[in-house]
Structure formats: C-alpha cells, structure tokens
Image (cartoon, rainbow, N blue to C red; front, side, top):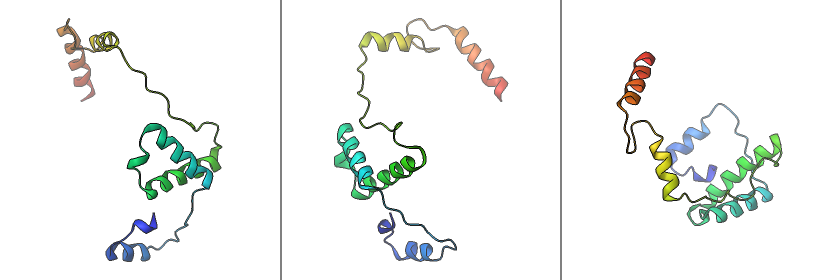
Length: 116
C-alpha cells in the first residue's frame, strides 16, 4: 500500500505522522487464497497486484485473529431466480405489484411520521 503513495505532498504527510507505521506483508497462503477466490468470481482481471495484496493482508490478519475456518475458500454460486419467483417477491413489497393497497402506504407514512 505504501508504494501507492506517489505524489510528493502525500509522501511528506506520511513522513510527518507522529506515529510509527507498522508495515505488514500478507502471507503467501493468503495471496493464493485471494487470487483463487477472485478467479472464481471473475474479478481477477480487474484487480491490481496492490488490490490483491491488500485483500490478502486483510485475510492474513483475520486468520491470525480468528483462524480460517469461517473464511470461504470459494465464492457462493449465484442462484438464478425464475421470473415467477421475482414476480412473487415483488408483489409482496408494499405499494408494488398488481394489487396496490393504499392502506399499506398510509401505514408506512404513519410509521415515518412517528420516527420524525
């Protein structure tokens, strides 16, 4: 990340900090895990090396603090919704769908007025 600080003004501000900066590097395991995950989501081509290493450092710090059992090794597959499922879900939203009930909006207006 420090290599991303390129302009002179930002470098001077960084040097003027009153605190010590602890520089950490991600583990090789975490870099590989992040790269593998990014390939699985189709994002690998849009990530810079700095992006990948920053996410890998976050992975490393999380693994050190809490282990890796809860970290996903592969992305969750997307589930396609059928048009019927979308229609049913949309019709459940207040004020939307084919059967708009003005009472639903009145209730929402009342709740919003109470919140103000």
